[in-house]
Image (cartoon, rainbow, N blue to C red; front, side, top):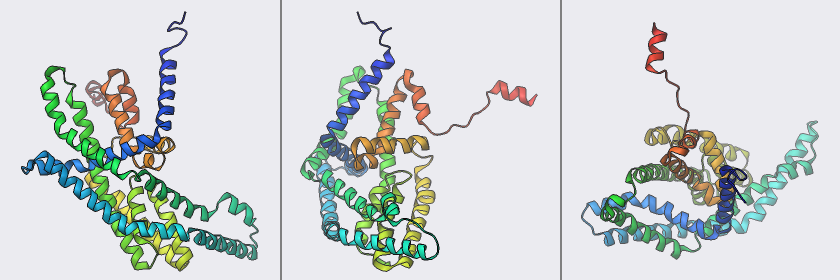
Length: 352
């Protein structure tokens, strides 16, 4: 006979968690488009509510927002799609030229008395692989958006549901779930996504203009990459900068590559440390370590899209922990650092 003593609740919970994670990973091809649709729908909520407040019907507001999305997606595809195809076609030649430059650098170091095995360096740290990595990431995101009709249709249903859900809960009455936690979650995630999207757009625009002025090929493509990876915390800006710097090195030389690196550093310092904190307030309510761990975990589970959505997904987990008294301690561990304050009686004793 199986008893709880033989199988503690912790082990049962852990086993269920492993099964759920394996199921999510197996169903990634279905879950990723749904998450993208939810992500885009959250960004569309402010303009949708604005149109409804202006007296436009729910159907008309959803139609206008959807048409705006389709128009924006068409413009983006027209400008970036050609660049992506051209870059993918020229990628092997860029990789070969970059390998050649690396070999020349190692030969120069050998002439200066620094003997380094070129094959060992290329095996351990191959700069040409970064170019291929950028191409794979862009291709992965393109594959996730391949089923565009399914994503747009899901967004439409989500927007309609967001408008009708409060009315449904009002009809349920006292049996309706508490709206406090849901409202807190929607406010936090929506605020984060909207602010992050505007900051990412500004970052992409500035970087695209600077790269075009410097003469680097495919500035819109690198602007798109900067926009996407600005959602990735901590290391997203570094990942977005590497292929652009390497392309500038291959195409225009070391001086231009240095200028491109400076552009990325300045833009990300200003946007990440000045502009974004001013509008984001105290941040997303997550520990820096948890943000990095979530980046690795969701990236492993769902691929590049999981990396882009790592912070919102972790915020969902944190808010779920906050809803139950038994798991609130986990929410505190996931949260940011909290200053330790003295209790009133301790403060009175210390003053005495």
